[in-house]
Length: 175
Image (cartoon, rainbow, N blue to C red; front, side, top):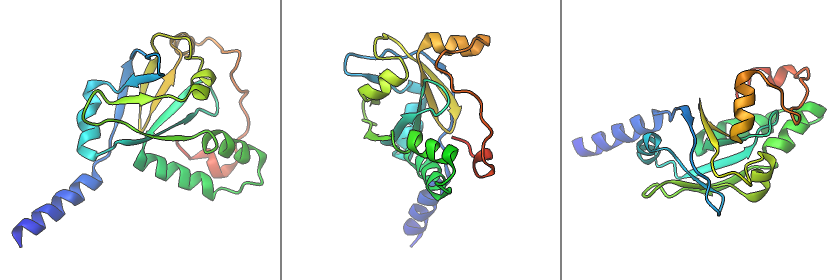
């Protein structure tokens, strides 16, 4: 009986644990379009069995978003529930949901994430040897290093989408 309770409590605690990603790294991108998750996050991914991730386009900048499965479920559910008649909402749904790739990572080894070639082109990382991997709390962002440095110094990107007035339904969303 006690053993069952302990297993149940451990499972409950594990499900409440939230994977948080912070910091900046510059991992190499190999010829197959793969990057390695930094070592400091591997234990968290293993603890949570987060071997399923989703990678998609950032709707505002030429970069990518990388979510662990549970965070993606939250975001995609919210996006799907929005009224698709608003052109801004519809564009966000097309960009984020329509370009999402679900993939598995090897949680036993180096934890490699394969970035599809169309997403590499979008983020301008297809000809790069390294990328900027930026921890944003609930996700990673993947950037071309030069574009990331421009963002940090206040420079503008020629491919940046102009600011628009967002509908109320998405103002409080974090994606």
